[in-house]
Image (tube, rainbow, N blue to C red):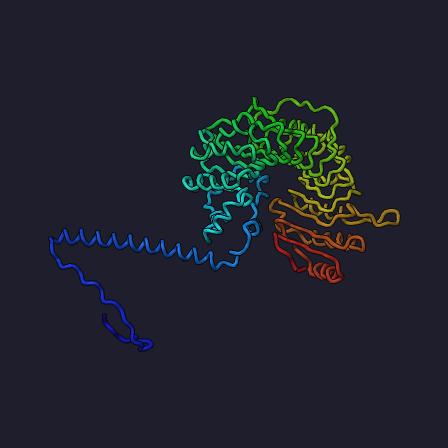
Length: 505
């Protein structure tokens, strides 16, 4: 054994001499083989020692863990509150038409991260079914790894209801598997306990199993297909399912399309790029709707069938009505006959010319509960009653002259000794897109804004937000000064130009 002194602390330390090397006995080739074999043997020993060391450290983690004394039920509850909740909020908000689903690598599920801390945590995580009830995955990013992860979720969730979000990135509707041959049978067994299902470009084989979703409460189906494939023919969901929220995109583009739904249960319905005649027919069969959204502009849609809507219809529970389609006879008929006694939000972009479908009668029937209104152009505002209780008004498309006229209309006027306000409860006005002339609104618009606000802001209306999404205003210095005075007087006045707050902030 050799002895030396540390160059830093000058303490004597001992170390073992390296073992003597075996004398060279054979040929050079034999010696090379021997060295490789010994190196491999030592690497295996090192790996074994590392595994044993890791096992000891895991045991140490368990022994020293502050949670070791907690009952399993308490630790499981802590994990449930720690695990990030699934964010399914946007599953019913389809992306713009033609937008592709992003091919992005996903993070490791948080359940597996928890289980990697110690064997004790792993046992608790895998014995906690409520931790495994929500799955969100892009099928195709990790084709070999995902089936195993999905198996963990299905098996560990036991009999608890499941929520699945599956986005198929290869977009091959003729794929013969639901997900993967190694996991399909397990998925089929779990279908009756799925309460929430969101599929993007799923293989068509899924249609054969949709009737098994007897506990389905929420569902969104994006059935957009490559041009090389014909559209799907049918969507069949079980009539006994407690389905309250449904969204369909790019489905049933065929004249022989069929649809089966538990219509009476649905309270929220979103249809995107569905033929307008079918959209209206589905809408009419859901009398308990609270929220309805429809957007349909595609020129590839089949020609609509003849209009069959000829009688007045009333939706007693409808609070949100969003109708955005090409101008067509079905849109005209719906506007003509629809009554919504408790409507709160209206977004209607289906009429380039409001006079072509008696829209004045539709606007006259709008209830006093309506507080949010979005219209195609300011010219449509002329059909809305001045005494409406609208608080939030948005124009989708404008030109400079229309914006100026709108500001003038919203300026209160004296009538019979009283100051009369158009839309007396209006608190927010949004101006959307427009032509090049809308990029910079002229000085006349700055004066019109000031005149409108000076008369609107009072003890009954102490706030107003003007949002110019793509425009700026050529403000006169004296107008800026008077607007600042209104702000300093305590009024909640905000003006946003091109997405940014202006000089008032």
